[in-house]
Length: 182
Image 1 (cartoon, rainbow, N blue to C red):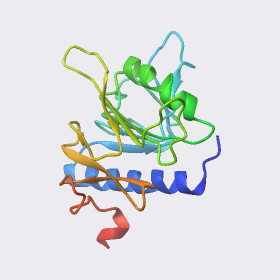
Image 2 (image 1 turned 60 degrees about the horizontal axis):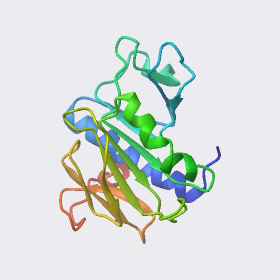
Image 3 (image 1 turned 180 degrees about the vertical axis):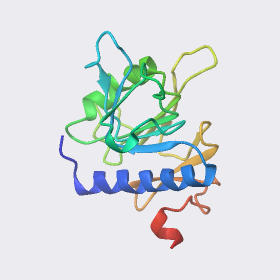
Image 4 (image 1 turned 90 degrees about the horizontal axis):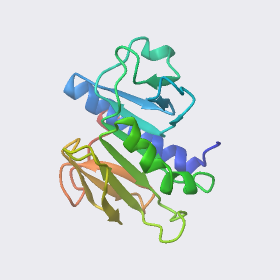
């Protein structure tokens, strides 16, 4: 589905921040618009996060179009990120969280800057895997929200149009993109 310029910019900013995080940590892999599949008996079943952070770079990463968790070197995401658009609101709010739960994703963030979701839309939702394997929504609101997986705050910036990572709740110490450190 085509993305609006605003949605695309939200994705570009977050993937850039996560790519810098991967370099600083020396491990992981940030992917944009890559399919996530977890059922070898039904490989077409899956979800297509806008951005995902994997615990390690999969083999042949530059050629991959999908992560298939049953393949050697393919792992469920540490984090999956969705930016809600008119065309994805039902999926992002409805079936998306259950699919991330099924996939083994550790944490999912759903960002809805225009509040396009059905019923009672919120700007930010966070789902997190518990020690018992459940995947409840642990946050719903305007932000900031804590990411256990990254040890950082999710803060809404740029007039409500971007989701960024920060060391502090107030968003004064944002994690930079590659362009912001040049």
